[in-house]
Image (cartoon, rainbow, N blue to C red; front, side):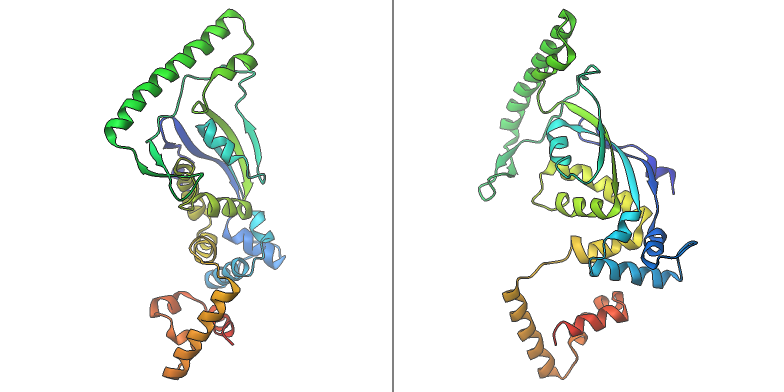
Length: 277
């Protein structure tokens, strides 16, 4: 594992992502799947094929044998989205015990999306955005002054913090297994997820890809970049592919581009053809 893996990766105005610790890798996934002792590996190709099979057929428990512990610092409004995923152990900075720092997030302001009621769209006009950012800076300064004045006057920390905006930064330790982490990334790396949370997912994805390259490859192929089809959509595709295969007298998977068939194992190609029978 390289030192770069543990390097604090800056995100946003004051945020960061840092890997604190990890347990397991691709070999641990294979070891658990084979229920064996020792390193649990055979050859690299066999391990890769096994991991792809596990991912493809939703055998999730072997992926739970790998764990990551991150130190994360982000705005409160992002953290509240983050911890909605109730599949990790979390310990957060306490505003009841400690003084909240004068650190606030300054976003790139965007229009409300016309298609997605809970999302945003294009960036605001730069002149309009600058005007709002000036007001935002003034607002942050005012709430910070009020918070610190309340603290100095003797008001408890747990009550003084109520004046602080959701843009205030918080930080926490986050421990999660690989199966649940990949599910989290599939949702929060999606283009429909809020940009501010997507900014934090890429450094985490880089860590997973470095430590578990075969698992990450399978995740990209079968979850992140895959497309789910309805029964009706699938029927139309089957009819179309059968028509092509009959017209050219070729097997189903021979229709695939060469670069795709080269990446798939023999078992994957066989399973692919069986889907159309």
